Length: 459
Ligand code: PFF
Ligand code: NA
Picture 1: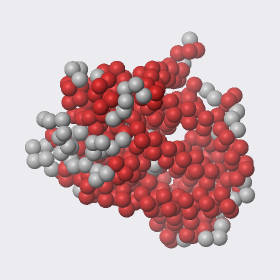
Picture 2 (picture 1 turned 30 degrees about the vertical axis):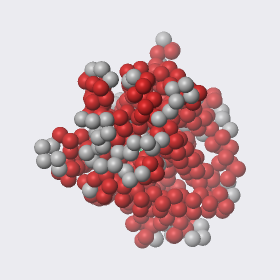
Picture 3 (picture 1 turned 60 degrees about the vertical axis):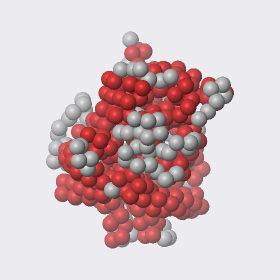
């Protein structure tokens, strides 16, 4: 195969489309649902600061490494790792890192789709006007009833997976690219409208700022740091091949470092804005920030129920949440789908997508039922299926995948290949900085956080 081959799946029509697609992958439930409730549960600003450090020192360099690897390999993560490893004179066993990613994608999408389903169902609730005049108790009841009903949870989860299947089955240009060019501008407009409103209209903005930016480090434990790092990987879609496979469709000569900077910047801003839009509301209505997974679904409807234009704003918010979840979910489905497409004799992406979606759908059913019918089942100590999948994938598999990606690109690829792919000067200061961080800082940080979380330092 020649150096100039392009991916058999097709390519994005420009670098900008790649940034849009990867930003779509990054900006999702992780920003609008998970980040605010983790900040709430982990005591606020200290968590935010550790999270931002992880984004900068670990996330950004690994984002660059992962895109580099993808564009070099031009295929699914498994086959990209195998072919790049062989080209670099390394063991074909590096393909196992691709498998780790595909496995992580299965686990993540199974619970992601359940929550994506909640978002879809709340679009319907907004349309029906359910939030008008809703009390704190009835909002809690509404959410708990949804979660407790196997029929609705599974119905919405199924609809969410069907949407993803439809998009991914159509391929890179007609599916993924078309979806992001329609959905991402919509997402930006909705986000700006809502944040503008949140800042202008809420009385508790100061309190929210203090909660998010005045740290109290006494609340920080080993587990907090692992949670922050896990969230950094999760929110940037790193460590499992989603960004790698999107990178595989990036045309040559488009700058990887610039793209990575945009993606990381947009994701971080969105998470901070989500916090600044949500916490003022939480404080203003006197709710607790440590509400947990229900934060967005329980607190926001109360507000939409009482403010002027609440009907419209509520609808906008849950459409935003759904759109963000869809553009991320697509990227969770793509690594395994692209691999199976490459493996199939008939090369049918449609059939590959159908098989992978069905398997993930099935795991998602277990996940959805673990919140009601199967809630008695624990996998990890004290955690139901849903929480266990979230912990294993986000806090273990993604950082582990990211660590191995940093090691592969930093230590196992020839410098000339990396420099060629990045299109930079080998002696440039920024390149040298990136190399040092990718080789030493990022791997050391991941290893230290793992060691700390397992209590190794207390021995
Ligand atoms: N980054 C997405 C979010 O913040 O919601 C979640 C995600 C997508 C994680 C794709 C991992 C991934 F590969
Ligand atoms: Na994100």
